[in-house]
Amino acid sequence: MELRVEGISTAYDRADVLEDVTLDVAAGRITCLLGSNGSGKTTLIRSILGLTKPRRGRILFGGTDLTRLPTHRIVASGIAAIPEGRKVFPRLTVTENLRLGAYLETDAHIVTDRMERVFAIFPALAQRRSQIAGTMSGGEQAMVSIGRGLMSAPKLLLVDEPSLGLSPLFVKENFAVLRKVNESGVTVFLVEQNVHQTLAIAHEGYVLSKGRVVAHGTAQELLENDEVRKAYFGEGAA
Ligand SMILES: Nc1ncnc2c1ncn2[C@@H]1O[C@H](COP(=O)(O)OP(=O)(O)O)[C@@H](O)[C@H]1O
Ligand SMILES: [Mg+2]
Image 1: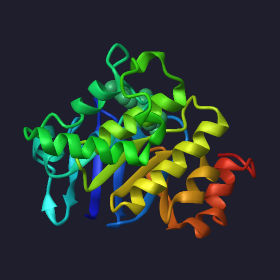
Image 2: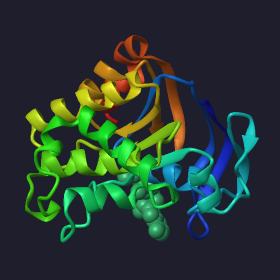
Image 3: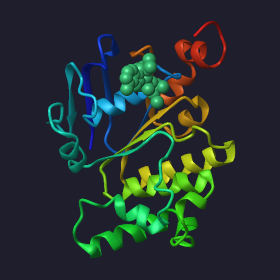
Image 4: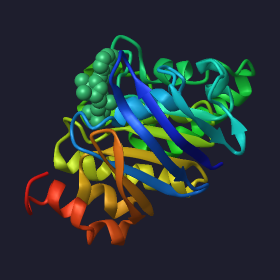
């Protein structure tokens, strides 16, 4: 389902962190938001989830206005988020971690069914379903956190910097998984600093700089965009 962020401004105290941000996440696609550290990416995700309410603007999901809804209603409308740093519950097993992602679902058969679907996407997790999550590698924990997001059967997955702190090999694997998730019908909004890997899987995207959208286009257009080159490829000051 499509998400539309319409002219939002968000602040923690007095100064706006996001200023008049407008963007569309098209249904069935992978849309990315590129921005350097501190540009406001996580704040945008918090705004979508209603964790930090925008001071101005609207957030529409499949045409429904989410702006004033509490977070649990926003999540229940079909949005799941994978937090920055892919937090897993380190003392719980893989299965227990996954189950927590489906806490809104009371039918045990549906939960089991969703879990099998997650294991189909991540065969490596299927073999480790009883392992304590805190004893797994960073790449495996990343799979657990994405899998947990999928357990609510979301229509839209928000992913906050999945590449952070992962080795290049795991980043590649992780992004391949996001593509697979998208191909299974889930709309993906991917927030990242890693330009090359992100534009390799995204269909389209936006560039955020100091809380404002400074560029927008297809992945190919962004690769050729001057703002992106300036900010990320060392061609002039960011
Ligand atoms: N909880 C908070 N309270 C006050 N300021 C915050 C808070 N979280 C983030 N900020 C500020 O908002 C700006 C954007 O941060 P953030 O959205 O985390 O950026 P990014 O995710 O792109 O690194 C930064 O200047 C940061 O210091
Ligand atoms: Mg962030």
